Amino acid sequence: MIEPVAFQDFFITFFSSALIIMAGASYALLFSWSKVNPNFRIKIAAYVAYVVLIISVAELTRAAHFQGYWLIISFLMVIGYFFAPIGIWHLCVKTHAHADTDLTTTTEDKL
Image (cartoon, rainbow, N blue to C red):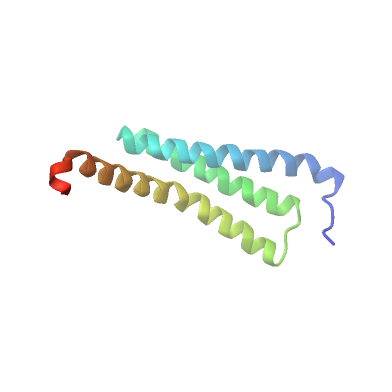
């Protein structure tokens, strides 16, 4: 059975969990914005959001007393949050590049 979080750590757990979601979304948004609008400051802001995410995960891990495989899940979550926007960006670029080449061919070319 999972042990509940102590009441004194409840608010820390709640707010660090919410901050994980907000920092992860901010990192993804700022990362893609830095790809669309190449600006060094936007990329720095994306990495700052990722550092906030790491700190939030560390605080959640401490407040919830994660041990064993929960530490591995926390570590994998931090790694996933870093690589997911990069992978999604590459997927979107390749998908749109493929769609653009399909639009340039005519139906006569396909026959």
